[in-house]
Image 1 (spheres, rainbow, N blue to C red):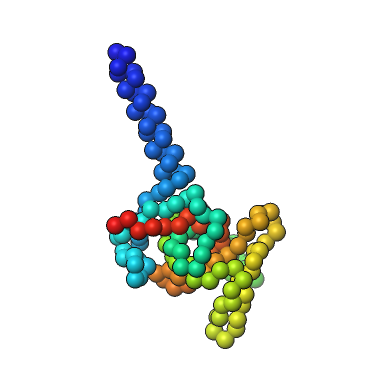
Image 2: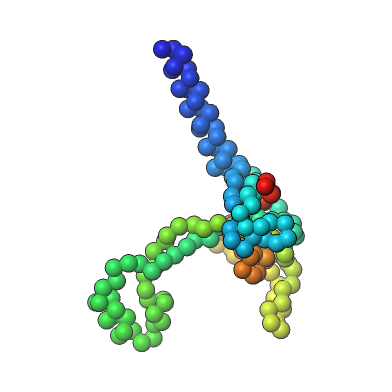
Length: 166
């Protein structure tokens, strides 16, 4: 009986340790469709270092998150009739949206804060500090190359640096 109790305690502690490491230190993700050529193809697995996410360099592969929203269900006729009466409001702004989940994406850092980017014929500088509201000294944006194009991502959205496993 004592052996079984010791075994269950050891098993519980080991599962707790695995959960803590996987949640707060290292996580394994699968690269989504489109991959990140040339080094990462769709279906490759990457390990993400969640601890070392203070400093990013050009060329680093990172995993980042974004919230996914969907239109709220059960919008009856009365809702639609009230929307028709609001001429100044667009339909997208007036429809309530519901948080669905967080989605994870992969990208390679192309531009750092302070770098200049070109959009059509206009040039913009990625700000060194994005806002004052969060009070964070590392509040920054990075330009990432993703499978769908280029995307400006906030540092707080980054999960960590990704390294190819297999």
